[in-house]
Amino acid sequence: MDFGRLSDLRYVDFRLPPDHPGTAAVLARPAPLVAPPQVFVGCPIWTNKAWLGSYFPAGAKEADFLSHYARQFNSIELNTTHYRIPDAPTVRKWRAAVPEGFRFCPKMPQSISHERELYNADDLTLTFCRAIQELGPALGMTFLQLPPHFGPERLPRLERYLLDFPADVPLAVELRHPAWFADTALRESVFEMLEALGKTLVITDVAGRRDVLHQRLTTPVAFIRFNGHGLVPTDYQRADAWAERLAAWLAAGLQTVYFFIHQKDIMHAPVWTQYFLARLHSLTGLEVAPPRIIPQPVQGSLF
Image (cartoon, rainbow, N blue to C red; front, side, top):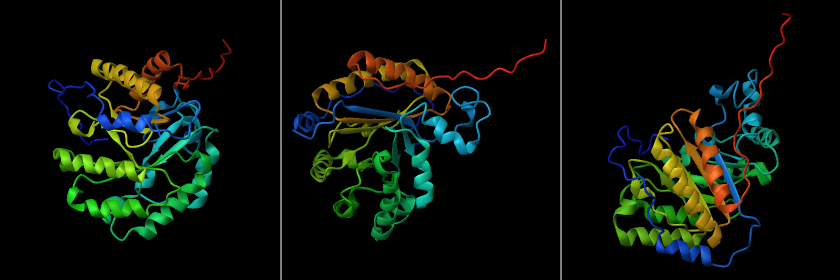
């Protein structure tokens, strides 16, 4: 995730802002209970060749990477769907490769979000939604990442698109244009619209755009994209802060967490996740298996 990434972190205030006042109201609202709350953690891709010999078996074939990935993480930010709509056999193959309890979070195709900018995209949307519904119970939450140039002047188009979006496909929305957050009245109206439509607003924790760290939940689901910086001290301080915030939200009624880790070096993601999940477990008691380096077979010697 290059969006908002900075090379110089000296002047970044990485503290989490206070919750938006609307968050408490969303969490306090009666809703069908998910018992216990569910926490899903993952990375943006599963074809991590750097994990061969550590988190993947040394001789693993690329065709089996998803299966091995799903033994380390219980979710995936499925970026491959951003570039093409998968066919049904491909989706069924993905579903068959993961264990029960795993969740895919497919990104909406760029042909819808970036090229057509939600205009005249109904047919493509229905095609995409039918494809990912082949995931069955392994479908977590689809997310719509709007391009940085998609600003508030297109609010009517966004609202119309969300109103027409298939109700049986959970959807999160990521806003990137700074103008969505610059005007208080506009920002609040967008938050309220998403809440009224039952759409989850993505929270992004990235150094160069602290405005997208709005801490406003619009549903009892948190969808968080975290951009780390190579296991520097602030990465661990942010892990502590997020564990504490999520523990508070879960205690207040949050039902589901999707938390996706972006690190420039993919070897850092499992290490950070181990620390983060240990902190979350200590605060909540929730058991989410962390990624672990797996034992590798050692060839015997005749001498």
